[in-house]
Amino acid sequence: MQSQLPQGKKIKFCLYARKSCERDELQALSIDSQVKEMMEIAKRDDLVVADIRKESHSAKDSGERPVFKTMIDDIKLDKIQGILTWAPDRLSRNAGDLGVMVDLMDQKYLIEIRTYNQIFTNSPNDKFLLMILGSQAKLENDNKAVNVKRGLKAKCEMGFRPGVTPLGYLNDKGGDKGQKRVYLDSEKAPIIKEIFLRTANGESGRSILRWLGSTGFTTRTGIKVVLSSLYAILNNPYYCGKFEYPIGTNKWYKVNHESIISEELFQQVKERLAIAPKAKPGTKVFNFTKILKCGACGSGVTAEEKFRSLVDGGKHRFIYYHCTGARNRDCKQPYIREEYLVEQFEQLIDKLDASKFGTRKQLHNEIQRYEKFTNGILGQEIDTKISKVDIKKYAKYVLKNGTREEKRELLYGIKTKIFLKDQMVYTT
Image 1 (cartoon, rainbow, N blue to C red):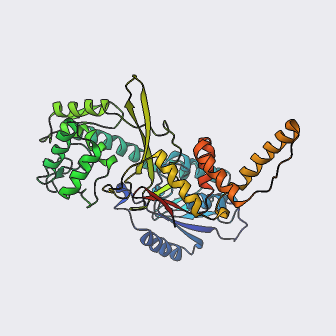
Image 2: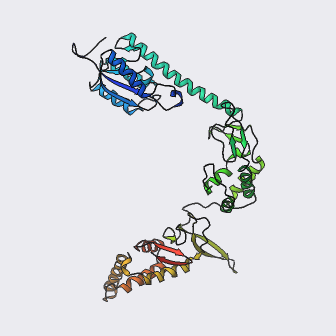
Image 3: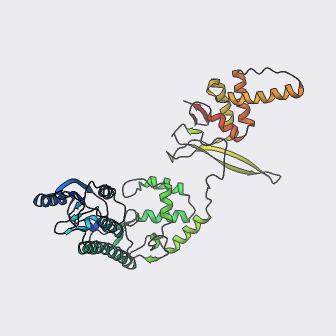
C-alpha cells in the first residue's frame, strides 16, 4: 500500500453510509445498520473513524449527492485519507463519481477504501477491481432502466396504461402485477358519460359544473371538480378507449377494458370545444377590472362587452361589470353597466375625504401646465391654490374624460378597498 502519511501515523477514515429510497434499493441495508456493522469492523481493526456521514440520495447520477461531495472535498484538503463503507455501490453507481475516487487514489489523497469484506488501495489490481465493481453497479442501473421501459411498453401493448386510471374507472387491487384489470366505476362512470353528452349538446362548462355540484360529484379524494379539471376530462381520449404513452411521443394504444364513451361521442365533443368561443386573457382591457371586489362573496370583479345592432346598421357597445364567481360559482350579484358604475364612483368620491385620493400631484401638474399656458400666451395670472373641492372635481373629471391609465391610477390611489354589491360601490 502506497501512503503519503508519516511512518506510524494512522489513516483518518470517514464512515460513509447511504441508502436510496428508490425501489431498487428497498432491500439494501439501512443506514443505521451500515454504521453499526462498519463501526464493529473499525473497532476490530483498530481504525480511526474521524467522521460519520449519512446520505439518503441516489448514486445513479454523478455530482448529485451533497454529503458525498463534501467528503471528497475533505479528502482533497487532507482532513481524511480513507473511506469506510458497507459496499462499493454505496459510494458510486455511476462512472463520474467512480472516476473521481480513482483519481484521488492516483494523486495519493485517498489512501484506502474499506468495505465489509474488501480493502482497496492505490495498487493497480485494487483500483482495477474497484472499477469493475463500480461498473457492475452502473450496468445493473442501466439494465434496470431498459427493463423498466420494456416492461412499460409490454404493459401498454396489452392495453393497460401505466399509472392510476382517470376518474370514472377503478383499478383491480388483486391480480398479477402489471396485468391488473380495470373496471368502470358504477357511481362515477355514468356521470362522466353525462358530462360528455351535455358538452356535445352545447351546454357550457360552468353550467355543467353547477349540475355536478347538485349531484355531489367529487374526485377520489373528495374534492369538487373545478373548470380546468372538467376540461381535462373532456380532452382525455382514454375515456373513448385509447391512450398515448409516453405523452408527446405519438405512440397510441387501445385499452383492454370497457370504455365509458364511444369514439364518435369523443370526436363530437372535440369539435364542439374547437368551435366554442374561448376568451383570450389580455386581449380585452377594461377601465375598472382588478380594482373592485364583490361585496357578497369576496371574488374579483371582471367585465365583458356586448353589442346591440342599430337601425342604421351600426352597433352600440355596452360594457358590463360582474362578479367572477371565483370564490362562489353560485354568486347571484347582478351586472352593472360601466356608465352606471362611473356614477357610483362619483358618489363615492363625494363621500370620501379628499386626503384619501392620490390625485393631488396629478392635479398640481395639470394646474402648472395650465398656468404656463395662461401666463406665457394669454398674459393672465390664475390662482394656483388647490382646494379639497378642486381635488374631487378633478377626480370626477378623470373618471369621465381621462385615459384608461388615468382612471386606474385615480382609483388605485384611493387608500381603501372598494367593493361592489347590489350595483352599489362602497368602501370598508
